Image 1 (cartoon, rainbow, N blue to C red):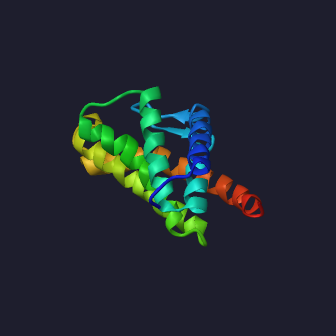
Image 2 (image 1 turned 90 degrees about the vertical axis):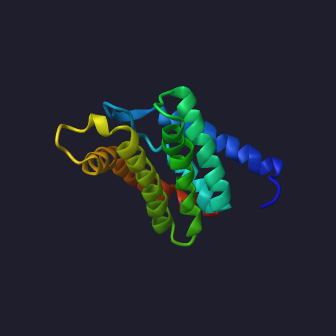
Image 3 (image 1 turned 30 degrees about the vertical axis):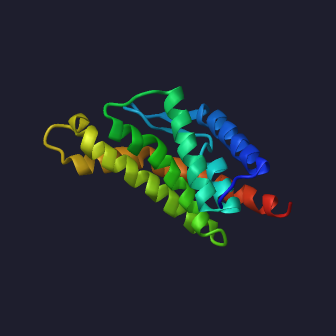
Length: 167
C-alpha cells in the first residue's frame, strides 16, 4: 500500500478513538503498569484483519503512542519503544491470517507479550523479588494482564467479525 485513502485514514482514526475509549475502561490495573481493559485491542484486531497487517501495525503503533500520551511513563527511550509503539504495532500481525482470525490474533498478542517481556527483563528487573530470575518475573507479570486482555479481545472480535463481513 503506497498511499492511504481518505477513507482508510478516517477508519484508522475511528479505530484509534474507539481503542482509546475502551482502554480507559479498565477492568483490572496492575501495580507497576499494564491493565485488562474492556476490549481495547478489538479495534486494532478488526482493522488488521479487514485491511491487512501493514495497516494494522501502523494503527497499532499510533495506538501505543496515544496510550503513552494518556499515561506517560518511561525509564529509557528503548523501553518506551518496546512498551508502547512496538508492543501495540505487533498486534497488527493479526492481519497476517485474515481467514483464520483466531490464529492471527494469537500471533499478534504473542508479539505484544514478547515485547513487554523483553522490556521487563531489561528495564524492570529491579521489581523482581530478591533471588527471582528477571525472566521468570517479567514473564509472570506480563502474562498476568496481557493474556486475559488478549483472550477477552479475541472473544469479542470473533463475535463482531462475522457481522462486519456481511457489510
